[in-house]
Length: 442
Ligand SMILES: [Zn+2]
Image (tube, rainbow, N blue to C red; front, side):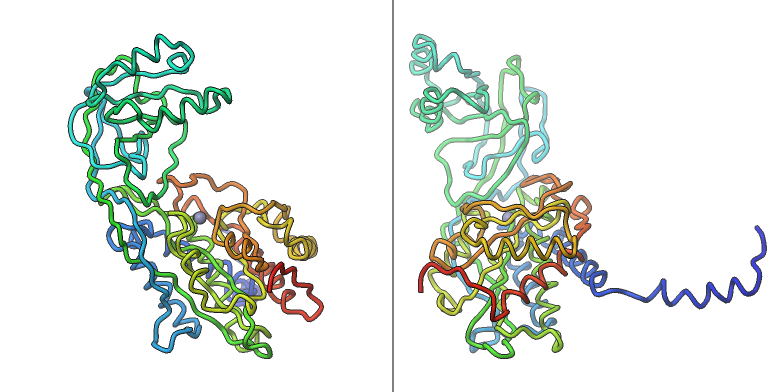
């Protein structure tokens, strides 16, 4: 290797601090947000669900972050929690499933439906296809059978003709008392159920079962918890000038949890990414030089995956009175990098135009897209009450929605810094006296 001339070394030495230590605000928050996402989707939090105290640990962690950031709590006692209870169906043991001698892997090859009850034993299999609903003779043949130890393999295409759909949906309510149903899926998507079904429901990847298989051998242990203890986590920064009126930044921290001790749904994109983005904003606005004019509350909702249960509890027990809630920015699925979509943009056109024009100036993401109102995250009931509320999610390379593949390493949050900067500017602009609030009631 060639020896470097002395002066070149000198220049390189001078440059080290510049390369090594100079950090823009956007870079700082990119790392802050990415680290928060990695932490929340780590095995320690068990998929932030209903097994192994996943939710309790996550809530405690977020409250601890709120303390570190310096957020105030609303309660007179030192607590950031808003507690509530909810019913949930949980899977306490590691499940096993085989078709004859072919053992399947839970999470990869099959899933018990979130509402599936406990199942133990061996069952025969009966394949059902569209022809059973089109040919009355074939349908009659099913209705005559004793199906109490039979699982029906539903080999039905995803899209069936309109008239047929109703018949198939009704058949899935189990009028002939089958032991259960096997739904063939191209992609396994899990969820959370507040109810337990009366019969077995299994989601099996297409190709993992074939008509030659004679028998289902299964062991699933499910427990229905009618009063599972849960909590939203809330904190706030007092405003500089308008203390009694709040901007809410929200994101749900719960995910799907675990099936038994080994199968976890890390929920990195859904929604460790949104909570991490929210924590980044809380950190920024809690710096004395960035104190907002309006008060700003940060709410980590729970129970979202079970049907927006945490935000419904908040709506019934509001901490900030609705007339004093200036705007709700809900963040859910913030891990991708290509586009930001705003749900309820049609109602909140001022907010959409603002975000779009800010993005055009700073180029955080390639596109900001508008969408109508939808009941798909925690902004929903705020918006239905006429409170200005939008839901932002990202689109791009991150896949694995509601599966065991929604992991931290597959959710790099490549635009975390840029999106942080964009949202800071957006939240600042919402506080401008010239900003036109679009509010339906008051
Ligand atoms: Zn979500």
